[in-house]
Amino acid sequence: SADGGKNWTDTGLTLNGKDAAFSAGSTLFAAQYRSTDNGKSWSAMEGCEAVLTGSPDRRVQYGVQGQTIVRSENAGESW
Image (cartoon, rainbow, N blue to C red; front, side, top):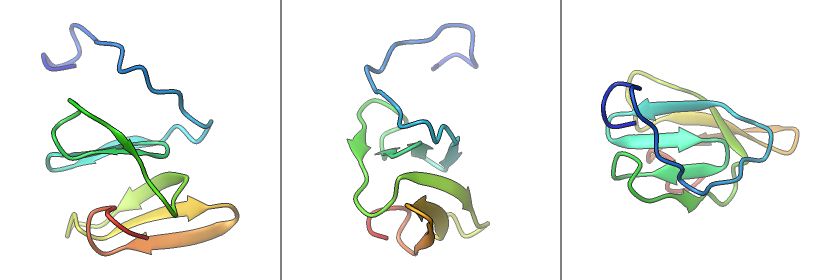
């Protein structure tokens, strides 16, 4: 949504059941997907099935891959 949740646009993404979603500045995370342009486009992340939480630093993110907790120090570019 670009208007505070009043209207929504279907992104066409299919999530993997790990439906955590949040933002770190202009970078958005939804399950195994990442957007760096406020949700205009999305790409699947390699090495992370879902972002679980981030740190106040915004570049440091924690996620899950299988049964392993993974860490990114570059806002989800690599895990």
